[in-house]
Length: 349
Image 1: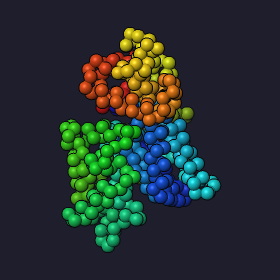
Image 2: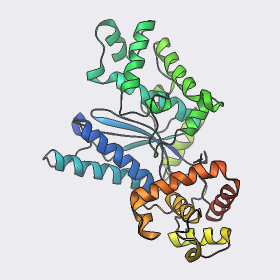
Image 3: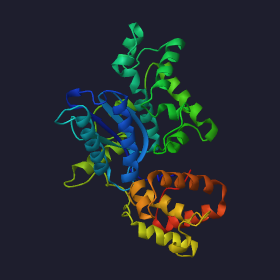
Image 4: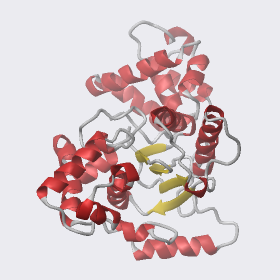
């Protein structure tokens, strides 16, 4: 999918109450990743990067529907309910619902992603001993030697609860992670993007420091150049102004599945009842693909709307359509036309 960079970028984070550990084991972390996939589908949030730490997490997201608060509240409430039930406890899990800072553009988001992905070098169980450990605790302020850099990169490569392995090409990204935009910032050549991202992170480690964006994370309302920070500050000072939608173009309302079906009927020139379920016809998959992007429904809910398909069937149909449009120009043209009718601003990779 492709995302309009005019849509708002955010750094989102949440920390456990009184720095409480909120991911006690891998089962907790796996459940949180499943919820991230669900929030992407349910609220049409675009997730660019993430890292789960012991007592907090970081996300880099975009919100085409200007619904960051709704999505993050659902995510944190869902996880808190799971955590409390599983670990036989009551009460708040997070220090506060969540924190967020607007990011000026994808260039700043790219720099921020390196900060997000270097987080595992700061957690206790990955701390290094001696002078090397001291350097890490001080923000990698001492230039490490080649051997130290290699050990740190290996730790990042093996850390399962971050999007870094996917960005660096060590692991296939989950379907709900959108890496294309930040990869393009690493290199214009698609084949070189993962290597370029690895090289960028390695260069930061060689310098003994991190991206200058870290300074923008310490205090302040936003992440970006001075002019952007001043604009955000000015907008935030106006009574009743919602920072999530300020300065952005009007966001279209979500549509119903019936509207999606009508759009596909129009571009195909035939009725839903005629092509729904027809073997080899891409029409049903087009409806499901578009519904996923502009209705806010989950895959299971979409499946019920299109005739009782289960989650797995919807997922596979969408995946096959994405592969088909890369090879089949007529199908790609139909999907593009239907997307334009619905004002869907994302298209398959």
